[in-house]
Image 1 (tube, rainbow, N blue to C red):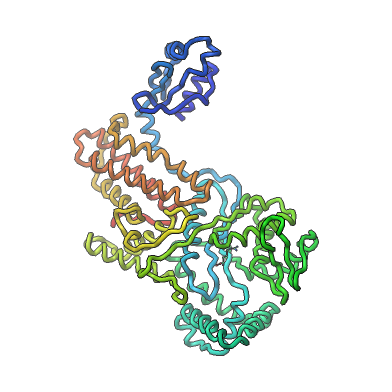
Image 2: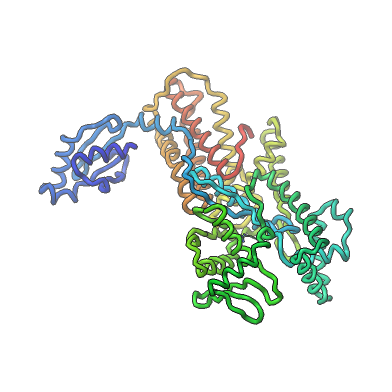
Amino acid sequence: MFKEEIIKILKKEKIPKDLLQAPPNPEMGDYALPCFSLAKEYKKAPQEIAKDLEKKLKPSKNIEKITANGPYLNFFINKAQYNKEIIEAKLNKKKPNKKTITLDFSQPNIMKPFNIAHLRSTMIGNALSKILTHEGYKVVKINHLGDWGTQFGKMIYAYEAWGNKTELMKDPMHYMTNLYVRFHKEAETDPNLEDKGREWFAKLEQGNKKARTYWELFSKLSLQYYNKTYKRLNVTFDSWAGEAFYEPMLKDTILLLQKKGIVKESEGALIVDLESYGITPCIIQKSDGSTIYATRDIAAAIYRAKTYKFYKNLYVVDVRQSLHFQQVFKTLELAGFPWIKDCVHIPFGTMKFEEGVMSTRKGIIIFLEDVLDKSVEAVEKIIEEKNPKLKDKKKVAEKVGIAAIVFWDLSHDRVKDSTFSWAKVLDFSGETGPYVQYTHARAASILRKAKSSKRIPAYEKLTHAAEKELIKQIALYEQAIEKSADQYKPSILAKYLMTLCQVFNDFYEKCPCNTEQDETLASARVYLVKKTKETLAQGLSLLGIQAPEEM
Ligand code: ARG
């Protein structure tokens, strides 16, 4: 807005606004106009042009001073006004823009535990949903559950052969996992089992009652288990339409692709040949007549386009599924759907575990809730050491322990692989969630102690380098959110919050609020602290993280 005012002043002289620059050092003003390119038109040396403009242009309400410096014309903005505007600005979200974004994330596979890849998808998707909503979009959060496929046939077989309801109900997820593991072990020596599994799945696809009842039971138990984790992570969905939901649409989907003339037969299977695009074929029906994952994704995209008329259709899914999305998207493009250009796969890399922490070696399955529990327990210990008198210790530990995992995940560029290390994840002074939460709590504590001063804050007195830096950093907040939204990267916002904390903690050391004698300055600082606290709290909430007042 200060820049706009300068642009207005320049416009009167017909000087193009693009010339305006940030000067290399702040003594030279807040904006600079190099006069070199004006020399031709004005038929004068740049130095003279700058001098002439200095005389001619009048300062305004927000532009305090305009001075010539060699071939440059420098503009000085009204600092008190600038500070006031940033510090007192409301943290609003943008006006709704009527565009709908469908966001496919989390997507665990029924009967299997929630693993780390699902955690990544859940956290990145959840943060994106909040960030995009903040940007004014209407976001439809879809949990595309993996609730269809041959694994159900295997499970039904295993349960019929070896299962027991009492045992199942005691601890459904571990029990189902064990049954599944047993099925695969026994299938190694008994090749008949695979066929038995396929038979059961065929029955399920044909609507067999018994198969259907089992499917419903296993789905229900799995969802109850997932919901416990979602509740802890504070994640909700607008739609739970998983793969099974599209089952009734698959016949028509295949027919439609056939009508478009892009389907070929190959060894009894139906495929879309994508060789000329350098992509392996997209199989839409296997030789035994069953459909696959890709068919269901094709149907789902068509369904979403019709139902939501999306502006963007996003998928937060492991980078290892890139080929799958290339196949699905190319097939839809060849089928002539114009909205395919708005479908985006948002990939993420693998979170690796340090050896000895938790092993992902075959056979050892990481249960997400164990990771969360372990983190919360560790935080409880730290609190016991550092702040044993804290109120609501358990609740705070839960918030901080979960934040540690979530922030760790989100602060890394999603495309890159990262290594999980407990020491780093829980380091209260490192680049972690607890550090950001701790900084927020520190700001809250300053505000609790601040004398309720009736003094009018003297924003012009915020001239210390640490104060200026903090104000500058706060001014970058909206931009950080915008960038996160544009690139679908919560890590940009997470890194911004880290920097804000560092700058704030530097300010905290150098610029005391509660011992400062000049009350009008102290009051301005308190407002700055308040603004920092609000920014941190809102920023964290956009990442799906809570900010306790004390810790
Ligand atoms: N359930 C799948 C898996 O765990 C991920 C689903 C991703 N979403 C989609 N529309 N394909 O591998």
